[in-house]
Image (cartoon, rainbow, N blue to C red; front, side, top):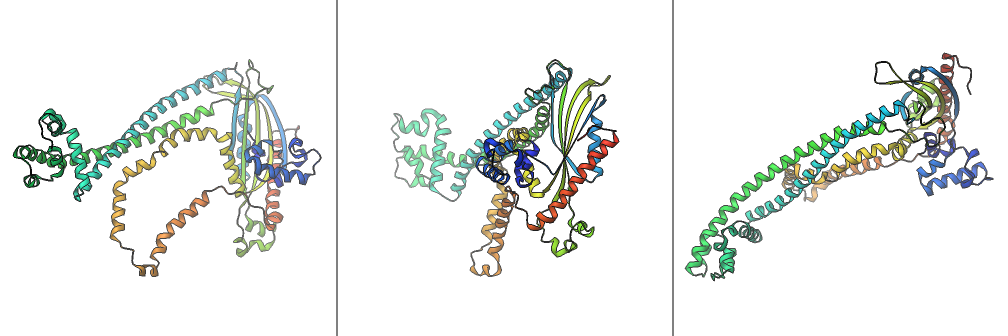
Length: 506
């Protein structure tokens, strides 16, 4: 998994890729720095972003490190002091990485595993309920499809379509009349009774009057008249019952979909918490010994502060022309001064007396990095983190709960919004827009605008790769954002160091 620094170096290799320590296996041991940078950019295009990020050698505009070691004092004040201090410096902070590993022989490891197991069991039960509801929704959709096909036949019958009438008569003979056994139409026609013309006559007659007009003997007519009468009554009543059943099934479908959404909402926190309670594999790292009472924590904070171009120009940090409104409108991107703070804790978990939680005392290694990033680079940083291993857990949660519903969402919407679709179709029919003179008043243009807007929205959702800095951005705006980030990274480091009376630092 690539680190945050490696991702930033891959997003903007011109500034944050360390060509001096680049991997010689890929870029050549004796290549110049310019050639290594060119080869790295080609590697990103050919091998993909994630693979290139895993091999990137990052650097930052400024880097300050400090160590704090106290087995008596807890580690939480170290983290929250710096977090609050970043807020005092005007940075909006977010937690980027939060990992931990406990030694298998510690009590902390056992207790966290028990909590994780509880969350997993709760999630498993809810997932079982979700699967049952999904099966029910699928069965309802299949039933509604069949009902809709049958109801279409009844609708066609009202328009006197002969095919619909013949279809319903076949259904009536196969499912209703067949229950009479040997006295059914098919039983009499295909049996030994000799009523060979009975089926054809039944299919040809629309009502009792048509039977009287047919050239049939009286025995066949006496059998056929009541059967035609029964079929006509059945056609009316079966349509009413089928429509009632259709509406009831749609109502039940709506309730099942709401249940599915509710279960999905309930299961997400359990899945997320269970994943957060999973320990990170540290491999052969010597700080973690199986039988020791040890814990390793890794935290990364990203603080960002937007550069106000107008205020900077008024303060003479930028040319005075930059404060003009006409110039400000030409700036397409926002720039941020960013400070990345890494915490690496090695602690000894100690249970708080009569409490169910632990306190951690130990060693803290803190590193401050300074960056200047624009809004496009920050957006890509968030996207790449979601695509990397950092976002795998949330993808799994969404895949289990959301995607299962999205796959059948079109079918569900079709049945639940059927009335609205019919009303829209009727409204379109009632408004005749075939008049060519309507185009003179922009009628057709109005119909096209929503589609164009939809296409624009789709384009905005596509990943936006960072554009190359303009001359003004490269020579004035980004250097100022970098300077502010460097000053604040040092100030954070210096204030904390002086507040705790530290001597050992770099």
